[in-house]
Every structure is written in structure tokens, then in C-alpha cells.
Image (cartoon, rainbow, N blue to C red):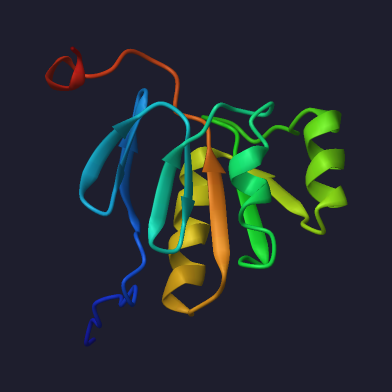
Length: 127
């Protein structure tokens, strides 16, 4: 079977994750992240709506990575996102990262708000 390398057309894929971090477009970033097309920003969690507001009209899909397990985001967050005309799609952070990457390869206008996996940062990332 022939394998075809995924093309992200200049967008930043999520390359990996671990306890407390994500590797996005080859760069290790600590803590919660908001990833969208060719951009990435530290995300302050469910109270931090401004970076998501800035994406209105630029994205059609918002995945919400809830950490290690699927869970529902707080009702106030969901209501605020729905008021912006977006439907948050909660899932575990690993599933959200994979889904985000798949939609990127399809050329979709997608973003993902990711909470990190629990646990301590690996020693090489501490400090």
C-alpha cells in the first residue's frame, strides 16, 4: 500500500502531546493551547473567550480537548461559544488533536482549544 504524506498547506498540525504540553508545528508549547490554521496561542481555559471570539467568521468547527477524558465543558462556556455562532465539539485532547489534523488536511476552517494531559512535565521540558 502506498502511503501519502499529509499536506497541511501552511497550517500548523499538532505533532504530539504529553503531560502538560503539546508539540504544535514542531514547537513544544506548555499548558492549554488554542490552535487555528497557521496560528497558535496560549489559552487561559474556559474563562478565556477573547482568542476564540477573534476566530469568529474564520472557522467553521471548534473542537475542545478536555484533557485525558471526554467531558462536557462548563455550561457557561458552551453558551458563550454558541452565542458566537459556533458549536463546541468536546472530546478528549488526544481525539481533538487527531480530529483537528484530519480536518486540516481536508482544507477545513477548524480550530481546537486544548487542555493538557494531566501529569508532570517531562524533565527536559521543566524550567
